[in-house]
Image (spheres, helix red, strand yellow):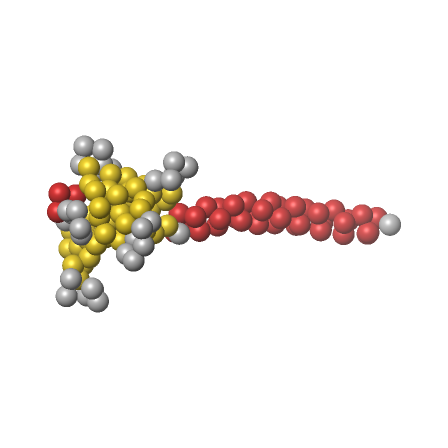
Length: 123
């Protein structure tokens, strides 16, 4: 009887801290997955407003338009199709009609808050 109680006590001392450790790791991993996964919207710039820090981007071959908001933390790059070379640019170098790929997170307001905007250069 005493032996059974000691075994039970030993197992509970080992099991509870281990389950607490794994129980906390799952939410941390979930947060990492959310941070690593970004949403994407690509198309041609229809309108740009540097005053409001927004772009309106129309998906190629569609009439769907989405607003993309950017701020001082947004990274701006340009890249030729199929090239590995990426050039740093600034917001003033993206004009109406340019093709862009925007990555970020969708807000509840339906606006993509961009962390990266890549201007695509033709061949």
